[in-house]
Length: 321
Image (cartoon, rainbow, N blue to C red; front, side, top):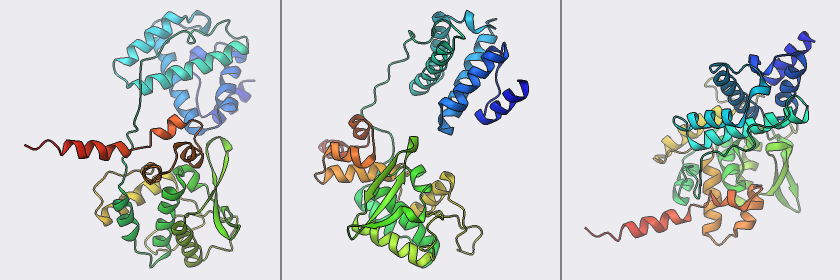
């Protein structure tokens, strides 16, 4: 059993604190939560940190048994966190504890969920914080990319994909060459979004041009199973067979923005927000933008709508001093 648990810990990406491992059965149930219930590795890591932080807090107060944890303990922990940690982070940690204890309740490890009745800090977000480019800045950035090499063609096509399909960077880096395909005489892209969801989008005519030139110029159009956006090791300008990681994309965007003289502090998510804002600014409908962005809720899509930024700027300029 111990050998199986160690293997499960490795799959879950976390080592268990003593609070969650008083016996093999409890330990296995906790590991099952991280290894089987949570598929996204980033979520798993965040939840593991949250569970570990609560275990350390309990240990410091002499609480060494899960059955002794009460809502009062969870509330005190959340109250302490709120003094040093941002509200969204506190809410995430509380959500992690709620889900973990729910799993322990259904597994009959504990009889009640001590986190279910605890309220987190209030946090209302009506506008996202992601930096958004203006349409002019986005055009200048794309136009400034030197497309005389496969790397330049790749970068323009990748940024164009995020702008014109509202795609998350994770979905873009997972794309294969075969995910660019023809349908009804038009180029489409297939995005593999979070939760294993497949999302197909028709290409804007500019994106269609960017992708066609990239596939042809890089010579990868026949490699259907290969990754679409590939790394370029060294300074030879040649592409490898390996996919770009999010860190690679972030560094690439920083270089391209600097070369184009764009002073807005852009991130990978900026292009998603820029595309949605420009779509809505030009008469697009929020519910359609929601479908295009593959959001579960229109409220989430609304966080990317930055049209009011220009209204606020115009009003500020009325202060004639």
